[in-house]
Image (cartoon, rainbow, N blue to C red; front, top):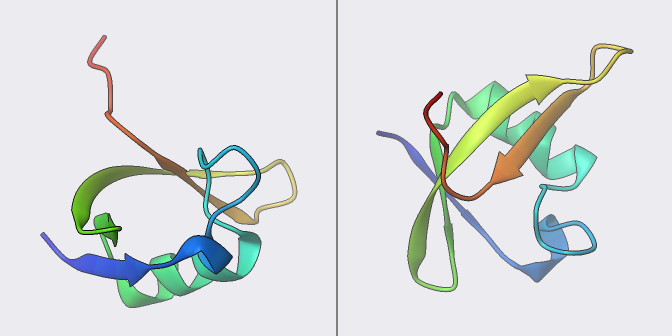
Length: 63
């Protein structure tokens, strides 16, 4: 588990996603989780249609 520490400036609107800049840092650093306000949060990596990384924050649901 590799944890990236983030702050409010790294989180988009409702707090569900990292900003594009933070998402890029997340991918380049090989992180798997983020630490936000003292809480370690699992993160879900996906990519937009144009190939930009998107990192969702919160619990991953198993299907």
